[in-house]
Length: 140
Image 1 (cartoon, rainbow, N blue to C red):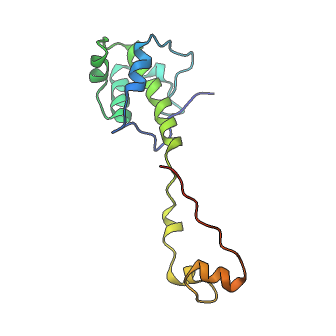
Image 2: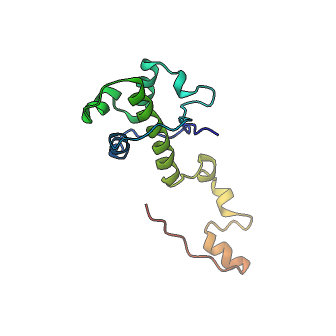
Image 3: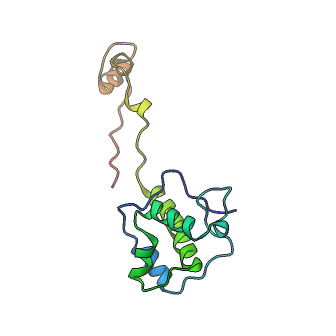
């Protein structure tokens, strides 16, 4: 099963040294490379498509990333950066706190007030004889 770039995964504005250090350390490309789309295997992408995908994910041109490492721009290095970028972008996305959906955060006053018309969830809980749990505090 191949790894595919998730729709909101991105490294724009994020540190890319993890990718560069892995590539510089002699990273061996896996047999099955991560893909930008499920229906488009990375080995089928030409040099320009690879560069465009890297720029889109990283927000930095591939030539600039490879230049930091003094590596030539070739298919092997481009595929390596793209693969590592997809894997890392998916990991970064998975670690980011999930934002509530717009529908969940835009309740009307009547919905928030509930059937008794009391607007506070704590007041409703007291009214219903339910103990309110303290809010959770998540680390960023």
